[in-house]
Image (cartoon, rainbow, N blue to C red; front, side, top):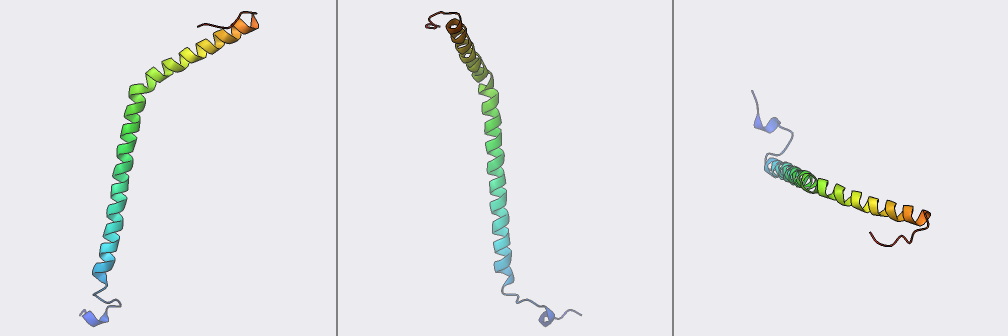
Length: 80
């Protein structure tokens, strides 16, 4: 029914090709896992530090606004 000589490829090449495909697949899985871990760390950092950074930016914005207002009103603009 099936003759081993009727196949179009050499059986000795198949393991090397399969190993190459398996290695590429494993590498892709490793990169996907690294990307997932990086995303988890980034989300955690943003969650942990996001509120504090927002407060810092608000403080900076308020100081700049006060300095501009003082400069426009003839004040020295020094201090904070």
